[in-house]
Length: 537
Ligand SMILES: Cc1cc2nc3c(=O)[nH]c(=O)nc-3n(C[C@H](O)[C@H](O)[C@H](O)COP(=O)(O)OP(=O)(O)OC[C@H]3O[C@@H](n4cnc5c(N)ncnc54)[C@H](O)[C@@H]3O)c2cc1C
Image (cartoon, rainbow, N blue to C red; front, side, top):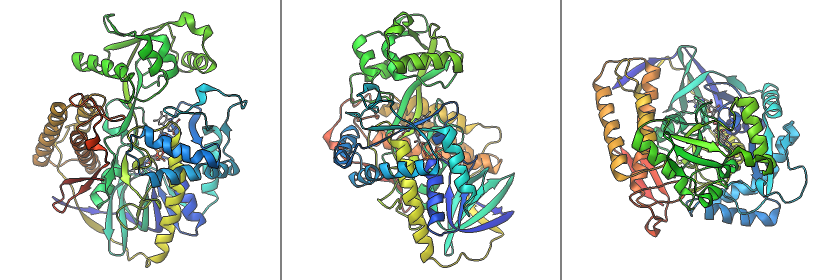
């Protein structure tokens, strides 16, 4: 149906940046530096999203050792990504990380760095082959550094402003946002989408609640292509106690995994040893058994508290610093004693795919740029640890510069509008469709994927959509959240169905091997009938 939405006010700018994680803030600062008028609109606050995940000291970032190392780094990204990356994007990423980290240091961001130059195996990023340069950026200095820089710039910050629709309008884009119970419009000559990943589509996720997948949905709706969306990272986390606590994979070799009633699920030392070498689930290694067996138990019982982990704590004194630090942190910060039973399951952590961009962070729609976890292509089927934060930083800056260049070529934004018509849907009052979608996505579209399960989820979502369309009109904000979730869930499920093989993070139980028939990236787009189309690259 068509819905008339009245805007309580309209802001005009040259460059609109949506999101204030590493990618969004880097883009905004760069567009400001290039002389553009900039607005950042963020549904929460500055320094938010996965880039500033609460409850931890900071996040890891990796950079190549030197010029020579760059080529090797791109080769390993391609190998780990099972050939699903766009090599040009991986090259741009690796080429810029070093200088962009230096620029952060000049801004006042400080980093945890290895204390000695001695070889330390625990600093090899997850899935990487060798030690490069590891940096841990510290939130305690990154937050004030970004905030000070933004406050002393001409950037206008609109916090608690959630963009829900971007419309090409006359000679510009009009972004509609919820702000303080009202709808406002932000007209811009160019837009940078930096809204993070798709964690909000999954029941168990490590992301904060502002990470909904709305950016990908809005971009798709506008005509942007999406790439590699079937590839995403799941890592084991705590169900109870201390829900959402991340498991340090290095400590997995000290664990045994049991069913709720004490039946051993995994105690194979080889599997546990290999699994303690990487955080996210992957089908590239025999340690896939760890996550698959746990998830089988979840599917069999249908209960969240179905798998428990017990650490063999008596061996701890012989373990390395990282492991001892982790147990200390568990006890002090999370009040969890390593000797107690801990219920675990895989948690959605980060997306490897997203909006398709080129080396200039341009999407397939002119004037729309994207950066960070909302995008895809620089990583493949599996991603090396520390490259997601780096991706936000590098492509955020590129997107800001390019969006500014684009805006400078455009005419001034046209006059203000009072109201606008958009397509929306009716939703059934009290019907919590988003929760239902999250449950379906977790059950059928996470670790174990099968044709039957994926089709079952798609049918359930189609039925839900039909019921919703026929239902009573309800709150606009909730309705749009449901609209975005349904769209993204369908795109993801269709991509998972189309890839009839297992590759990297994508496991099809009915097609457990990687197949050369699928040595190509999958691109999803809105076809001329407005349906979900796809092509292979
Ligand atoms: C627990 C955890 C640990 C991680 N550890 C690492 C690590 O060590 N190394 C690594 O490389 N990667 C790591 N990752 C992944 C990495 O943190 C993210 O991929 C990266 O920080 C994403 O940055 P971003 O700027 O693209 O998005 P985010 O930092 O997620 O920011 C998204 C922003 O968009 C805003 N937003 C969302 N929707 C809207 C909307 N509709 N309107 C307005 N604003 C909106 C959000 O409020 C937020 O400000 C980790 C992720 C998690 C969850």
